Length: 213
Image (cartoon, rainbow, N blue to C red; front, side, top):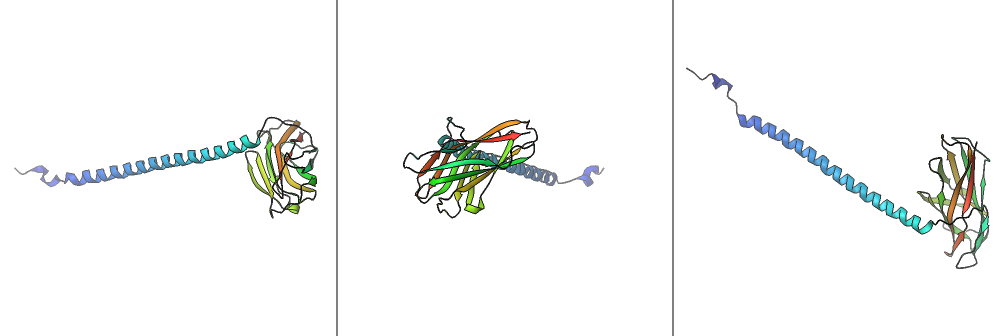
């Protein structure tokens, strides 16, 4: 009698080879995904560590716990007799939730040789209740160079010192929708102005009052 299975004979190696190829492809994809995830995780942690180091360095250098709340003050630099006044004026007496108010930061009576060319401060406010953005004053060529976690640096775009009375920055605070009515404060801390000959003028902390109806 003939062998009935003769016509059904196959080459088992071919089927096994195809299965093995699929397994290899799947493993390769999984390994690739794993490597990508590891690289992405390492990159993310590296970026975070660099950012945290930079932020902590800035805060530790410029932030301290002592504050005063005068709206217009004069301070003399520790290294020279340079001085100036700073004042803050808002364009609205009060706002409602969802609305914005703009405050002009103005310096006057500048006694600093050729004048001032940069301004820096730490802006402390309740980020759960307000959003803050900084507008530059084009008339006197002030340009925002950074606003990182509340730390702000402004500088003259032409890098030329100026001794005229001038608005150096405009702070815009927007009340979020969940802000209850009341009076709130934002604080400008560790205010420093740099003169044309790179002398530092330290000013007292300034309070910005925001009234929400």
